[in-house]
Image (cartoon, rainbow, N blue to C red; front, side):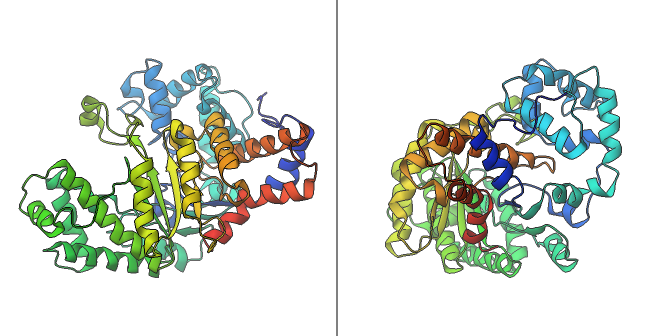
Length: 465
């Protein structure tokens, strides 16, 4: 029998009442994930549990490598059955890692499996879950509907034609699936060969002849218009840090010509190119009343040997220690100085900077929008109990928690949505513990409403879904 019972993570009667009476049944708005729109549009059905659960999940891959499991059972040529068995062998040794909780939450919520996964029951659970995946209730959309997902926002490149989003909308499929504009490749000029290939694709998608920097900005604005027509209201950016320069520190047209000519750039020129391009984009987001997200602080592709074998996003990224406060503040101030700062969500990956981000948002709240500036939920390595609690505490102590737009999955897996439950249970336990200690009034109606706002209502209003 699983340790995950009705009151999992809920440590007193107030927490229990907040969760079961207020949070549990709220719909889910997952405003940032990396699900594949084609799978949703075609209501994909997975062949087996390995394909649904292990493929593309670098959280699990890292853990398996740490336990000495050969790569052939992770991303290699072993059979799906063998890969699942190796994962099952690993799970009992993941105690105190969030994967241990997530694994058993997902097995229980989607498949009704309450046993603890191990080598002993791997065959039975693999067959049982793989069989359920063939049912309509466990198709791509069925899995989302089981979790009461109302809205989800995918992450899409500017060159995407969004045909799968159009198909979803045309067929009135549920949940509501919306695109998010993710232009990282549009300013990733470190590798000019890759960048020039991308420019060709952007030129084709935007029907723009890109021969100067002004053409690049024009092409990106056309793609923003295309996304807007397809109900996009969010942009997202993954960066080590935001840059800040005085305008015209470098001649942007000369930098762009050097790129087109495959001439090398200095580090500061690369950073300036990102800075100026992002400023143009952010002003356009504000014009269209979008919200913008910045995921800051990942140190990517550390293992060059494994990068060469497996490519990026394979489990070799970690937390970075980049300077954030000064350039971030100056970047936001530049946009605010002309009243062109859109609604903004900031996510940090380094927990030592929690208070930096929690206080930064307060600098640019101007009363125009409730919670205009958001300190985003615990991200990546921080979306576990300790990381989420620290994020909530930093926001509570230095901002206004009641304005928070809540949790997201940031996941490539259709089986990751119990993470919303995980967050909600933790949130209710934090409030419930304060009520038990006499730090908050025992006003279940008021505190319960704040919990519901954080779980659902705030995001609904903030993003206008």
